[in-house]
Amino acid sequence: MTEDGTHGTSGYWYPDRQEQAGVGLLSLMRRYRAAEVSMRERKRRSMRMNATDMEAVRFLLRAGEQGRPVRPGDLTAHLGITSASTTAVVKRLVASGHAERRADPADGRGALLVATVRSDDEVRSELTDVHARMIAAADRLSPQTVAEMSAFLTEMITVMEADAPSVEADGADRPRPMSEMRTHPHQ
Image (cartoon, rainbow, N blue to C red; front, side, top):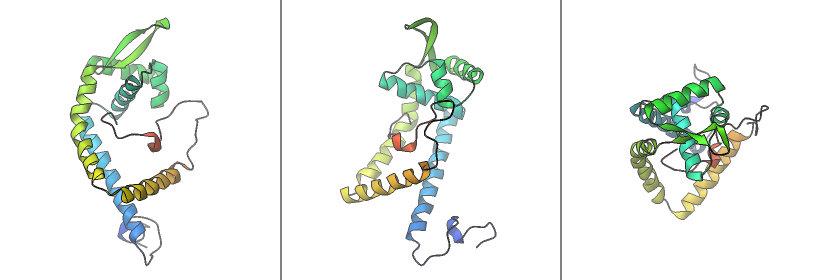
């Protein structure tokens, strides 16, 4: 065991094993995740948004693609923040041209939130090239490798989600699990 309590250079708390392929693969997954987080942070900064605002835009874009109306309460639930914080997020997004408030046809006093065309264009220009290169890398894999990797990643997702509550006590809709996410410019 090393000084920081981990085993070897992998950074995982697994005992030394003769076969290190599994630990090596998990280390690569960790490096991929760190690289992805770093890339998304760079893109977010280039768009001059904080993480909450970017997640709000992504949520609005996905809802727009699916034809789902978004009310401020929906955004509050998705982001897991207070209604006062949601008001601040919406004000910033409207002021920056990333979102619009529209009258709710079902409730004349209410508002719907919609991502703007500018927002959609900006997200696409920031992420389309990266996603195209990711898809190209995946397309080079054999069907057997894709099937094996899909099974492995599905099992890893199941392991990560095993102890996650399915619905919060307050009934709030939290960010979607990775198993529900698609490779898409808005993600």
